[in-house]
Amino acid sequence: MTSTAIRPRERDALLQSLRSGVVPRIGQRHIQVGREPEVKALVTDIDRISDGGSAVRFVIGEFGAGKTFFLHLVRSIAMEKKLVTVHADLNPDRRLHSSGGQARSLYAELMRNLATRAKPDGGALSSVVERFVSTALAEAQQTRADPSQVIRDRLAHLSELTGGYDFAEVVGAYWRGHDNDDEQLKSAAVRWLRAEYATKTEARSALGVRTIIDDATIHDHLKLMSRFVRLAGYDGLLVCLDEMVNLYKLASTQARNSNYEQILRILNDTLQGTAAHLGFVFGGTPEFLADSRRGLFSYPALQSRLAENSFAAAGLVDYSGPVLRLAALTQEDLYVLLAKLRHVQAGGDTSRYLLPDDALAAFMYHCANRIGEAYFRTPRTTIKAFCDLLAVLEQNPGVDWRQILPSVEPAPETNPDLAPLDEDTDGRPGNDDLASFRL
Image 1 (cartoon, rainbow, N blue to C red):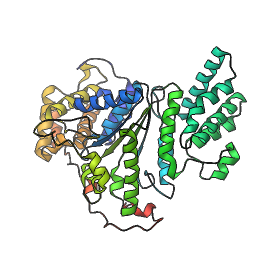
Image 2 (image 1 turned 180 degrees about the horizontal axis):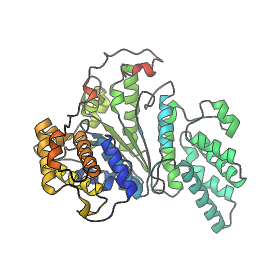
Image 3 (image 1 turned 120 degrees about the vertical axis):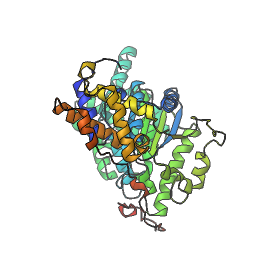
Image 4 (image 1 turned 60 degrees about the vertical axis):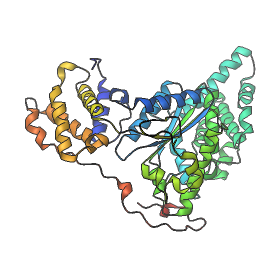
């Protein structure tokens, strides 16, 4: 363990998030352990996106095994490699296909969470548009051309894509607002790009365009956004969607299949190379993937495309397919993780460690006795318990860890996705609303 100091902001964010049982938004590099092959596979995808290609991955892991952390880590790597990232969790109000605004809500959430290396916490859409305008102005100055003509020329190829004409018109409106110091026009353009206009009439009144980003066009606009961020000087767009199990929970067979049809469209576009500088990472549980009645494998076209390599058996692996199963952490991995958490809690100062090395092994032995091997295979509650232990030791100097260790009671993870689900319903046309979710 190095003695490099850890910034208090990162230290506090890490410990507070882990004690709450949620994934930290910053500082993941301080606690990343194991899964080197999986990380390398996603780095390969990121490089392919940067080179003009496309990629899609389904990150599959048990509940509490670290899928969300892995997705956050991939996003941070992508931003370091000059990609723009967007991310969102699916829930009853956000999904890939709908007729009641839930798909548009998902796109709006993605755009709110748009992040770059300079703005990793999201809210970077305005900055990306501003950067596009700035690079166009710089080009106009170098060539002594009219800035508005340079912008039109750079956006011209977007008009060839579905929805591209109005997309280019909106970016042009942002430029006019920039040139005339019209903040209202700039704000209206950003609102359109964030899918915040609910009606075409409102958008036409504000921007003079005839369309909006609606439920039916979110995939087309993600492809447009991937081209646009390239024009702004970035290397591509990575879309991360977590909690995909919410599609598995849809009670309506029609609604579920409509969402799976959207996934199939995304899969075909990326695997066939018709999308450029665009990647998707989906996070889900094994039930979401393999359940033959409600999961992705219930949709024959997806089952055939997502079938795993039959030769990757008996210890052989294949990380090149679209399905990436997260291997469980080993006991050695968890020991390293606990050591890193101890290091984070000490702010990177080895002289401030609250626990000796033998206490880490004792803690693991204690957890194994309480909940069995689940303590390292689905380690969320184990990590939370360890952070709680460190917090007590920090606030009660002089207390011997041996005295309080027996009182630590980690609970095994329970997967809510395995709870009984509503029976399938046929789902009449138009019955694609919140009622199709089982809450």
